[in-house]
Figure 1 (tube, rainbow, N blue to C red):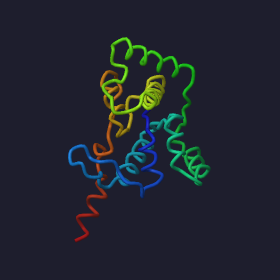
Figure 2: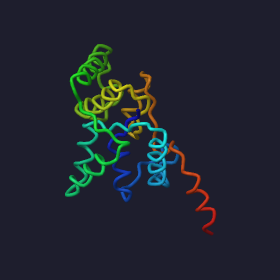
Figure 3: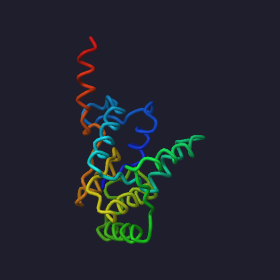
Figure 4: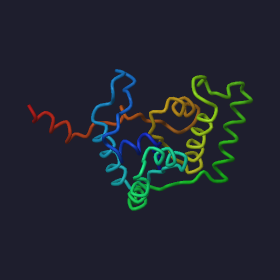
Length: 175
């Protein structure tokens, strides 16, 4: 299983949304829609479920506006997606992460520029991933990246998702 955060879901469901910056160039990641679509297609072929944590779903729906019900319907009808709640086990996992951060004297996990509420929200996403034994989180959120450095979960940015070969071949044919 893998986890998509709100940004990845938003890029899939709203292809016209601005892509996050590529950490190497500072420019928006090119071919965002093609990267996400090909990734989802590949995960579906491999029968790998994509977990959408309810905190990430909430963030997605905030940006959905009047399309809330249609986005939920799309997610629920596609068998590759699984909406996963922040339940009791995830709450215990998040509490453990929070306690460890406070005990280490680094409750903000090096992220002084973001609010404590945001940090806890990100930990909820990570806790859901851990409880469901996800091996990967797809996210461009720097805090999720830094916190997962201490776990068995790898985090992949949009820029690290390969552009599908067919997209590259089509661009080479367009002169």
